[in-house]
Amino acid sequence: MIKRFFAPGNNSGSANFALFVMRVWIGFEMLLLHGVDKLKTFDEKSATFPDPFGIGHGASMALSVFAEFFVSLLIIFGLLTRWGAMVLIINMTVAFVTVHKVVLTGPKGGELAFIYLMVYVVLFFAGPGKFSVDQVLFGKPASSGSSQPKKK
Image (tube, rainbow, N blue to C red; front, side, top):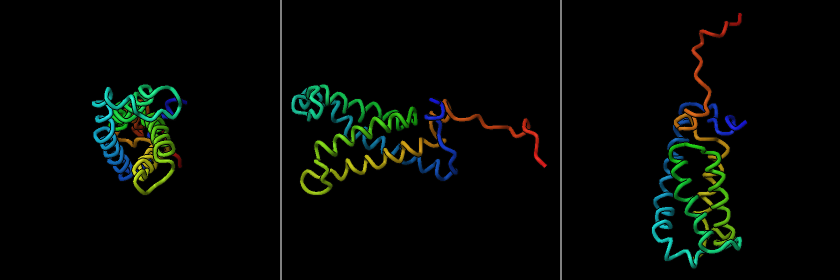
C-alpha cells in the first residue's frame, strides 16, 4: 500500500520530464523565495506570525518553515513526493484561507498561494514522475521481457 502511494505513475517520457521540471521549479521557488527567508528571520518574525490554530506564533511559523524549506527539498529530489505535496497543500490552504481570506486579488490577494496550491494538488495526484528518488525506492523494476512467455 505505501509503495503504491509513493510510486510514480505510468507516464510518457514527456510527461515524466514535465513533472520533473515542475517539481524542481516549484520546489526551488518555494524554498528560495519563502522557506529560506522564514528560516533566516525566524527569531524576529515568529512573534507576529499568524497563528490560525491557536498553537502559538512560533509553532505556527515552525510548521510553515518545515513545509516551505524542508519539504520543498523533498519535492525537488522527488522523495516522498505525494506526502510532501500533501503537507504543502495544507500549508498553502491555510495561507490562502487565513492570511489572504480567500481573496485572489488586491493588496492582500492570495493569487500566488492559490497557484502554489494548484501545483501541489497536481503533484499529489500525478506523483513525482520517473526522474525521482521515489522511482528508485518505490518504482517497479523494469522487466527484461525474456522472463514472460509471449502470448500467441
